[in-house]
Image (tube, rainbow, N blue to C red; front, side, top):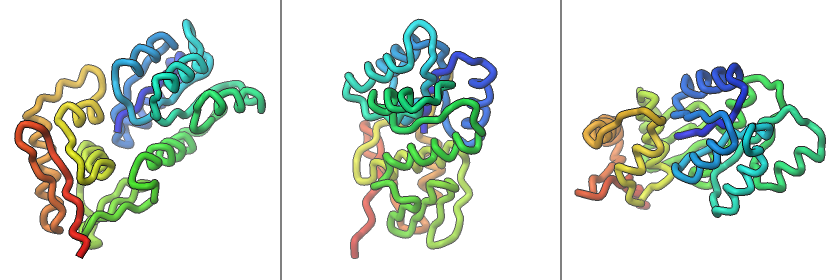
Length: 224
């Protein structure tokens, strides 16, 4: 799961990045509206955490331009402006949620979990895929009721496959969603991550199939 944080307050941004990375998310950071607009135009993110009061280009302008590109990326607005009119402007511009400063990091994490759930399998808290169940709140996977020990990167990989169950996922897509700027992840490394996850899922009959030269696909469970 890859998140873009657009926030010009260095101290606040540092806290956000540490908290989100500890939760297993890949997080990139920009300090201005122009940087945010450029990043969103060039890369794919699963969530945007957007400060309204950005320099060079306002957060609202960044948001409007994002929606004008027909992007459905979930957006959580952060702002020191907590008037009703300010909230309405943000939501009308296409924001999905709104958090006024100051806020507790625990609340922000809860809102991030809620927003990222919306893109997964109709947004249930618990996703079931054959013998596999995945709790999106606790980010815990179980196979036939038993918890599976997964690394943070394996959890993120599983989320990507569950989002696209039955569909082809290319290695480029995996790199885009798993890695932050500056991460050097090779195609071989992706193969290793997929292999490790596959080994942990196959005892329950959950299969990740390699489509040679194209990518991978999480097989849909047998309906019988």
